[in-house]
Length: 248
Image (cartoon, rainbow, N blue to C red; front, top):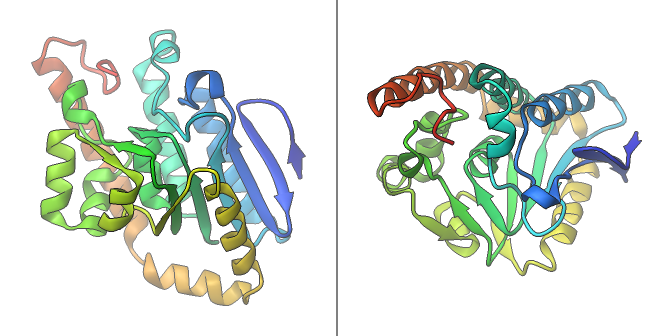
């Protein structure tokens, strides 16, 4: 399977389905259609017996700067909310290994989506951020559940409450990423790791992942619903019209 144009590039390389976010002029920020497109691509990869592993990366100067503010202004909060829930649940229920190789800006959804990825390789000079308190909204994408599972309750609280920037190197130290590498090597490393996984027994990979993530999908879905409700309440409290995405 191959697609060389559009907001998501799709290519198969040595048993690896490579999904490349492709809006470099907007630092790969998501439109609502891009959310649904990624969810669909993941669904197709899950059902394709020729695909053993998925690798996600971004084109251009950044991995992903979150939601596209201009696109948000032209759409509705509900459409974006449904799109983000679709892609997060597609990630959370994906049965095969997912590897991500990320660089540049990793902000908002760019960071929260990686909480649902199995192996994350980051450029050491990447800039990560969970910016929700500064934006005046709630955590998203199930991050209120997943972040504390990955980095612990106190560090999750610090990252979410302060909205501070962290480097790729610190992200690896905290466990947000599996490893950090120079920016000019991270995509190649991601491909190598993904190809190594394809050399192993597929049913064993699927079984190990299912055991590791048993029960998480429902917890994530519940967290998304709580986050959406909280974002609406926060928006109304600070004078918005009440939908979750207004302050982004």
